[in-house]
Image (cartoon, rainbow, N blue to C red; front, side, top):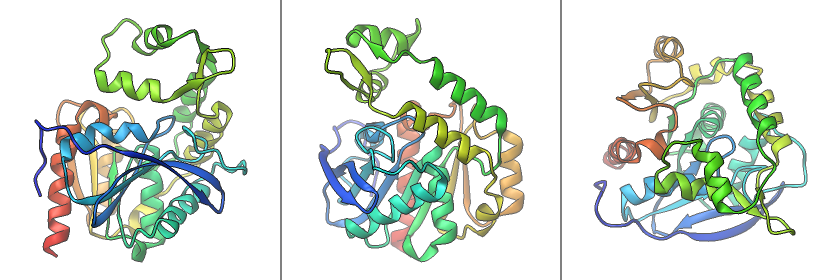
Amino acid sequence: MTATHAAPGPQAEERFVDLPAGRFRYLEWPGSGPPLLLLHGLAMVAEAWEPLIRELGDTGRRIIAPDLRAHGQSHPAGRRYDIDAYVDDTLAFVDVLELSRPVLAGHSMGARIAMVLAARNPGALAGVVMVDIGPEAWKANWEDAVDGFMSMPRAFQGEQEAIAYASRGRELSPDARRVFLARLGPAPDGALIWRADVDALCAAVRSQRSRNYWREWERIEPPALLMRGERSRELRPHVYEAMQRRNSRPGFVEIPGVGHNIPLSAPDALASHLVRFLERLEEG
């Protein structure tokens, strides 16, 4: 298996599934090979993985990328946003979609979900890849996130106004534009509004960043990989170093010159490391 960079990747199929918690949306790239389940970060949507899929090319694998609880078009009836709720949703995807021992890869909050699930249910996965997240409680982090969510405009009068807000004077890549617009949907009056439940985003980051997951991190066994962006302010250097001291069994990769949002800013590097991880799994 090799990562490709010239040809476009396979096209996703948008689907919906009824899980125990309610109706969830997901993107699927069909294949007959071993499944790969991708979990996006806080406030994102399944489309955040499209640049990676393009770089991977046709792997032959079945790839699933859901909108997580209260994100995108996944809005279950319950109002739980703790880590256990997201782990339960992920296990339900594995069960209902018959994803026999998938490789689970997540970014940011998705990586935290993957970390906890892998620690508590190691037999459910063939491997786990965690992209740019630490296990520490961090009050200032969730406070800043909540402030940011509460200060966001609640509606935009068209795509141009939305992109102007997203770019804030800097040029957005085509991928960043597409993913940002995928986070918005039409309101009855024609405006664009957030698909995510903003109050739920606040509750999720507050709940999940108010406790630590060092115990779960210390239980992670190979095959596992942790990736960090060299310039990340989310997975801070001292936390990354502590993770290596407290559990040296996973693999560790630091991607030079990039920050936290590796799936959008460095999908080629992410694809390259993921391919090597998957190849090692196939080799046994």
